[in-house]
Image (tube, rainbow, N blue to C red; front, side, top):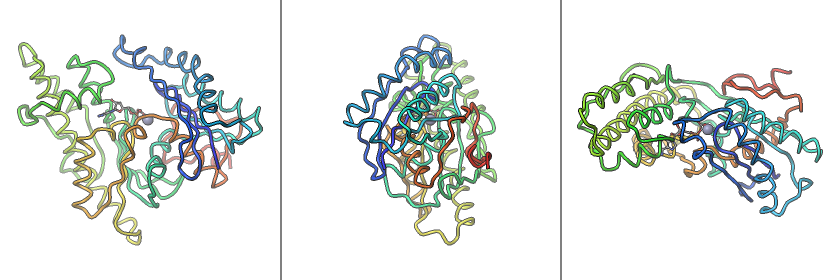
Length: 349
Ligand code: KG4
Ligand code: ZN
């Protein structure tokens, strides 16, 4: 089985062709970072127009690089939400048009399901597994029982984890996108210098909170008369360390909950991470240590499969198509689409 996947839900325009043997035949990814940089964040209207300008060319280039024609495909998958609706519409309309013209199935993929299943593209990860999904829009702990079957164990009550990285970078004048810059800046910093809070740490359950941490970084920065590069490095290191402590604490609770929910699941238990923040090397190491200590195995997809990409969308399309889960051309793009809600297909009966 071989599928074309399209991703346009945020600020990356991407197309990839993936087969059921986990081979990525071709991929094209265009980041819009430079277009949004002057505004310090993503401007939805600019994003939608840019997706529209590039998606046909990128899809064509991927097909040519894979030496395939549309007749060779088994289906066409696109992110159907959640995300910036203008961009999602561009991807969905493109995929629907191609599917209609080529007479191939169309699959609307939940972007979060793309992140959730990416580890099954890069490795052999059996269900059920515990997923820590940390991206720019989401921060959740989920039990992944199967394709389309997710139990949410915890979520953020305010900011998403990536959002906290982005806001921290912005308030320190480090630019956008924040995650990679904060990680790089933290490398030379002292994580102990500033005493920052660990929101939710030690509490029951698996929920997260990040807005207090971001505010504490702002207060510490405001207290410095003149902020130097050295101060910025210490603040980034302190922030990243606090995020690590929180993720480890919340995921420890989730591991215990997960073990109780699936006592018969094969051992060792599997902890999967996904989403843009999962590209962070420091956090990957912290979670690796946690998993080891709990008798779990950590599965972390390569960094380019953690941040937004079309290969994970194509792969989720394959997983859905293999189970006969296809969508009608009436599918309406969804700005909001929680992973643990019934899919539109199931809702339609
Ligand atoms: O999954 P993703 O590419 O897009 C969404 O679905 O949101 O995640 C983007 C988020 C951004 O907030 C970005 O700052 C963060 O992931 N991110 C990182 C790193 N790389 C990207 N956060 C921390 N460390 C990184 N290395
Ligand atoms: Zn994403």
